Image 1: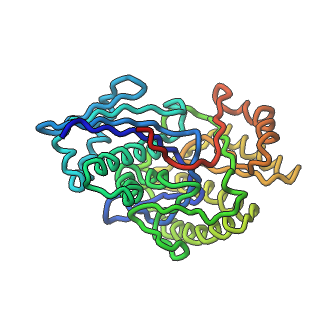
Image 2 (image 1 turned 45 degrees about the vertical axis):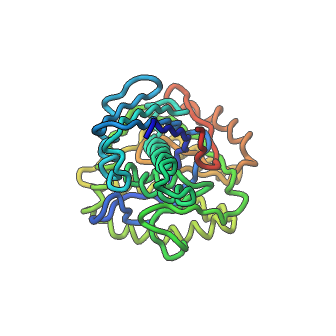
Image 3 (image 1 turned 90 degrees about the vertical axis):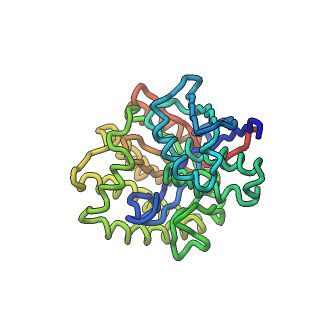
Length: 343
């Protein structure tokens, strides 16, 4: 076959109930269900060209620069999906990718980058008449999971759920499903990402997930995550901001508490992370704001608030929070509409 080409943009996402821990059997299967907001502005744009060859050869560019150091992760991903897409083993594959957010700012790009790549692969399979277009998104979510667990949730918007859970009909450990039955309040929620530390993560996700396996509080964590999934489902459906804030902040702090009590243990927050949290809490108490935060496995803070508060929240960021960001950097984002096919 001649050269086939695909180009997609896919967003990052921010988990509200966290995926932290994998099942001992299988590949990239979650120990508990999770749910996330799909973002709008923080995304990866990826184009791939696939040409016939005697054996697999992969080249990848980021922002126009050849990145051979990215190849091991990509090759591992292709090895995992080659049985489903055997042409990967007899192709020259060129991958050209870029992020709309600065690389190295501490925003996890694995969800957006691996979901964008998965969409391109599945699109090529559709072009080869090996996959039905109606099956494409589900298959893309399934294989994105094999590159980065949280990437499977980036396929859907405004929220995505991943992991089998009794309150979420059709939920699966193998792929994410869209969660759309939410109050209009949450469909345009805002997320200002406060960049406290723009360095690389101190602890990789792979190491972090492994630490939970023998954690003394691991099983209790999985039980609480299951309960929190039910609580947040109800809050999202009913527009219950108080319950939403309580679950989201509890989940963020629990994630960091687990890292602080693992073996070996890590403190991923910085002093400025705590300063931002305390400022948000103080403003919430003083002016009854329905504002909250969440954290990934790092120092940066996702400041969450309703769209109707956007202007006053931005003013608050500039006056009270920006000073705690490295070089004063932050990213204004919001809930988005999911991936887009560009070619």
